[in-house]
Length: 311
Ligand SMILES: Nc1ncnc2c1ncn2[C@@H]1O[C@H](COP(=O)(O)OP(=O)(O)OP(=O)(O)O)[C@@H](O)[C@H]1O
Ligand SMILES: [Mg+2]
Image 1 (tube, helix red, strand yellow):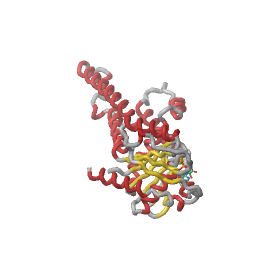
Image 2 (spheres, protein in one colour):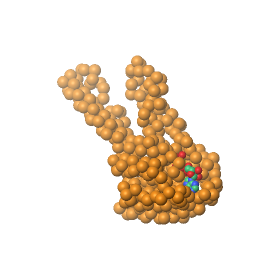
Image 3 (cartoon, rainbow, N blue to C red):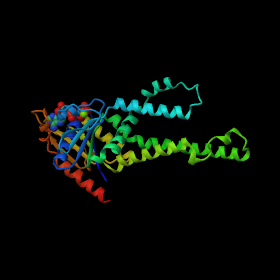
Image 4 (cartoon, rainbow, N blue to C red):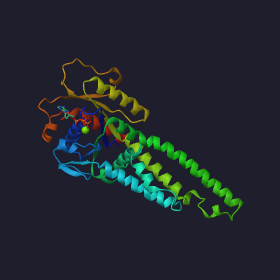
C-alpha cells in the first residue's frame, strides 16, 4: 500500500509549502494525515503557524505535524552503535571509543542514517495512527543520499554476512579437527552467533526502508519555471531511476511569477505534471495554504494509492 508522500526539489522552490498544502487538503478530505519535516533547517512549523517539535502535534482535526530533531537522532544512532561495539569488543581495551565516536559524529553517512532511523521510527511507531504520512525533505543532496542508503547499505551487509559465514565455517573446521582448541569455545553456529544475528536484523530493517521508498511512496518533485530548478529535477529523475524509487509527479510551483516564456523540458514531459499559481500576496497564515489548489495532485496520489492497495 502506498502510504507516504515525499516532496523533493531545489532549495526555495516550495517543498515545505506544497507538502503542507497537500497534507492539509488530504486531511480536510477526511484522511488522517501526519506531515513530517526531515529538513534540519525546519520551517514547516512557520508555514503551519505552530511551534513544532519531535513529537507529533495536532494542527487541526485529522492533521498532525512534527519536525524531526536530526541532531537527537544522530546522538541516538551513535549511542546505539557505541553500545553494540562495547558489547561485541568488550575484550579489546585498546579500542579508543571516545575518539572513534568523535570522528563518527561528523563522518559521511551518519546524518543519512539518522534520517533513515527517524523515518523508520515514524513508520513503526507513529504511522499506524494515520492513513498517510507526508514528508517535507532537506536539500536534494542529503535527500538523494538517504533514499539511496538502503540499497547501498544492503550490498555492504550482504558482503559482511558472507564474511561472517566464512569465519563461522573456519571455526567449525578448526573445532572438528581440534576440539581442544580455544576456537572451540567461541561461537561456531549461525543460529547462536550475535554478529550474524545483528547483520540479519540490519538487513531486514534496510529491506523495509527500501520497500517504503520504492513501493510505498509517492515522490513529488517540485520545480519553478526556471532553468536551475528544472536542471536539478532532471538530476533527481536520473538518480531516482538508478535507485529504483518512483518519480510520481512533477509540481510546477509559483506559476506566473515571471513573464519569461517557459516550457517543460522534454526529458520530464512523460511525468504527470501539476501546476500551482504564484500567490503575489504571499502565504502568511495556514488558511493561505488552502488557497493553493492541490486537488488534482491529491486525486492523483489517492488514485495511485488505491491502485497500489489493490495490487
Ligand atoms: N505558490 C506560491 N506562491 C507564493 N509564494 C510561494 C509559493 N510557494 C512557495 N512560496 C514562497 O516561496 C518561499 C520558499 O518556499 P518554501 O519554504 O516552501 O520552499 P522550500 O523548497 O521548502 O525551501 P527550502 O529548500 O529552503 O526548504 C517561501 O517564502 C514561500 O512562502
Ligand atoms: Mg523547506
